[in-house]
Image (cartoon, rainbow, N blue to C red; front, side):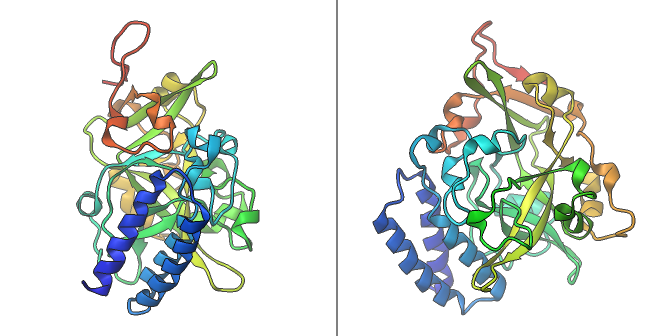
Amino acid sequence: MTVEHRTTAYLRNHHEHRNAEAAGSRADKFIRRAYKREVSLMDRFHTDWRDWTDARMQNLAGTCPVGADAQVGWHGSAFVGMAGRISPATYNRFMCGRYQRRSDKQRIAEAFAIGNLDGLVLELTPDHNVAPQTIQPVIVWDERFGTRTLHMMFWRFLPRYVTDPKQFKLSTINAKSETLLSNKMWQESFLKRRCLVPVDTFLEWRKEGKRRLPYVFAMKDDQPFALGGVWRHWRSPDRKNDMDTFAIITVEPNELVAETTGHDRMPLIVARKDWQRWLELGNPERPPVDLLRPFDADQMKAWRVGERINNVKNNDPALSEPVRDEEDGQLGMFGD
């Protein structure tokens, strides 16, 4: 087995640890030993792949549910590890904290006209419960080669001034569109480093008493679509750790999201015809602020799914199946 195959198999195996019950001391020791071994292997590959492995390995220790956090619909498991523990209640204030990516690497490449996948050795398996503070595929524009490329990034934007992610308390999984130019934390990235996040659906919740009822939003044609985001590269002061990080932009909700959930925000969806304009640097004096608007509700559909999706330990295709409304017994479908 080649070094590349060994490393890919190793990382795929550890991806399954997100469903484990606990991250005990033995697992921590194993991860540290494996990290040293795999980084030495990655020295034979190019820098981008080694940097991605470095970020992924540091995140592995935080991919196991911990106590009651595992029952909250925000992947409590993802809040532990490199970036430290952040209360899931903090993320409940944000509108885009979960999405689903059923597409594998090849389907993403075809749907988004990705020009270069050579640097992405890892085979992307579908993820039916994508949560913050995990490593996810993100599309950026490669100015040097003039093509779209797929990079693995950490879903929590880390500004340059952050010295220790564990001590960084701001919630930066989302960036409000209204502050992209006025807030210095976002300004440079919005002007120079915009990205697309490939998804098949995103989730929102409607609160009914103490219950949070999950709803899935997708395109009527069931095709993958793109959420708009911003990204930046983060490096620790000692220069031992570095990784690309991103945030998903939010805008005012369209009619479907507002009427279904009552939320006042939704993720920015970039229309296919605007993908290239969004990704390319263009004129910094004229950023694409006109694209910061709610997506056409007539092109979308939504349906309620079971509350199994609220549990971080669940990650399977059945999470997307619609459930019947408790009052009238009809499937909770909207927008058809």
